[in-house]
Length: 101
Image (tube, rainbow, N blue to C red; front, side):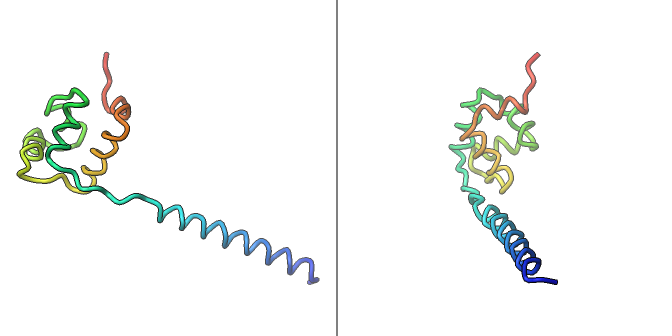
C-alpha cells in the first residue's frame, strides 16, 4: 500500500461522507405543516370549484368529515392539512386527482 492509494481512499471516504451530509441537510429542509382553519378548507374547496363530495373523495374522507371541517367542528389531521396546503399553493395539482371525460 502506497501513499497515493491511501490518499485516494481518504478522498473517496470524504466524498461519501459529504454526500451523506448533503442528504441529511435536504431532509431537514422539509417545511412544517401549517395549521389549516375552517375558512381555508372552505375557500380551498370553493376555489377549486369542487362539491363537498368530490373534495371528500380527493381527501380520502367522508362528505360528513368535510362538512365538519368547514364548520370548524373538527380540524383536518396532519396529512389532510399537508394536502390542503399543496392544493392551495398549486391548484393545478387537482388534475392529478380528477379525470374529465
